Amino acid sequence: MDEVARVVSTAFTLSNDLRRDTEVTILFGAEPAPRARRMRLDGRRLKFLNPDERSTAALLKNSLVRSAGVARDVEASPGLVVGPAEPLDALREFASTAGTIWLTETGGPISATDVVGGSFRAVLSDPTDPTAEEVTCLREAGASARSLGARSLRSSQCVDVLHHLADQAAPPGAAERSPVSD
Ligand SMILES: C[S@@+](CC[C@H](N)C(=O)[O-])C[C@H]1O[C@@H](n2cnc3c(N)ncnc32)[C@H](O)[C@@H]1O
Image (tube, rainbow, N blue to C red; front, top):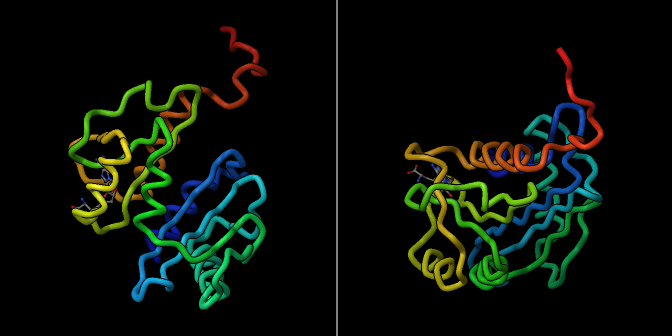
């Protein structure tokens, strides 16, 4: 949960602001089947996300608790929806959208075409690499394997790198900024 909270924090928080154009989906595996959960966070409506990861972990954990045993999606907190899901089906559904990239150290190098217009859609795993079944699912869904370099990064660091590349592709507010003269 530590690293998941760090990923969520990295995905949404800026210095004194939130990335309102960002969405994060987290798949929590659990046995037996109905216990697995899909959590979706939508930056347009998200509230109560503070910069410290301890409170983010508490927000996620409390949302999971609210969803436990409930057979439908619940909005556990503004902009945060949790519900039952079959993780492999949910992964297939997510990765089937054209342009989805799958971050893996063994993929081809990431390039500007992966973040055209400053937008991207990416799958990454937690500290445990995807299972063989998940890898097959990602390949069959057509996700493009992309690497951020030879070094194995933390999941949250991958999010930072992706945001940086996307921000460079479409600098926020660039149109309004006047050029610096010397
Ligand atoms: C901590 S890593 C997973 C474990 C890692 N493979 C290891 O051996 O310790 C978490 C996830 O971040 C992504 N990731 C980490 N480094 C990456 C890189 N250099 N390029 C692309 N994705 C990376 C992958 O999705 C990876 O599964």
